[in-house]
Length: 420
Image (cartoon, rainbow, N blue to C red; front, side, top):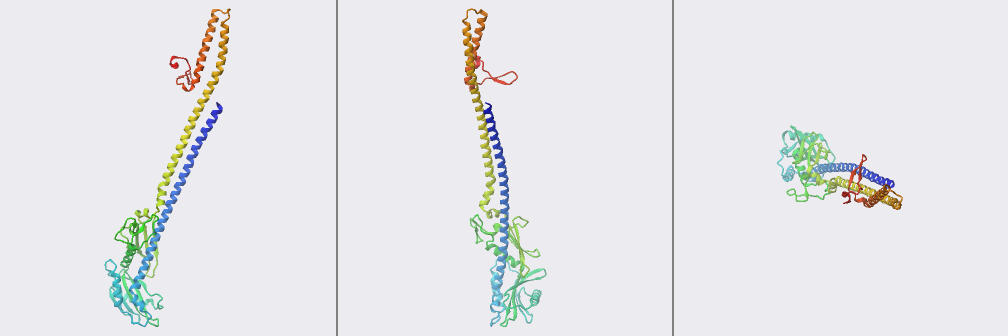
């Protein structure tokens, strides 16, 4: 019995240790999973910042490219005639091309739009539109200070002239004769904020500024209608462009511009002083940009660990309960075996006692008192044999009674209650 009890205690201790070890391992796994989730969130934040930085660089580069195309398109008569034995273009040709170009923009007319031609030899300036008075004089004076340049080293160029606190962009191209001498300068002007806003607004509508999302979103190039499954820049991004002094030149509609973990700032340098592009991921756009598998991993990682934890704890508790039930069954079996051994040995002893009592009862020399005592021995022996027969059913004892000060015992007496 002690041997079985020792083994049972060992098994219980082993199961309990397994439960504790499982809980410890699950705690470590949960901690590591939480760290992994934080790392995933950090990687996601880095990805979003990379997206915004990419968007800012794309925006700035595309704006500069379109300004270069603008200068090339409007000043094409000048750059095409330079260094050739042809008649110099008239200012009217530049004005016509400029008006046609700017008419394609839906923005309100720019009060700073104007055109000019400066004679390099005399410094005389011919102006149209906004190029007159002090602005015309400032342009002529600035161009003279730039000095001579090599032919075709820079077909078109741009500078900024500030008049009465308003920055004007001045795009120009030099006209060279066959000897490489600059004879005149043609150009056009526009209010810098209006010009940047016109170009930037078109770029923001027409150019996909973010990489295709892992979720499979398709870019919408028709800004009048966004179809299901397609996204536009304004649904994902908030952007603005400022000059070096911090003045806002353009910003997207409906954007929130503040310090954000997903915001980036790109600085672009130009001959006209450069500008800064700030881009932010809209909160509503983050789910579109974050790969769907990343979102699912974030959503289900801790849930899966919680389910696994509950499952392993449940299995461990079931194993512990089964071990305890098994230990009780083993104790019952041991008690049954003990009762069987006791019954066998005591039956043998009682059989000998009863046999000797019967032999003594046949003696004629016994008096009545001795015969009564022999009768009592036989009756009590029969009673003990009946009790021993009850030990065959030790798993059916239901009557438990107090026993002195030592606790409780099973009632093996032959009372009418127990006999039933």
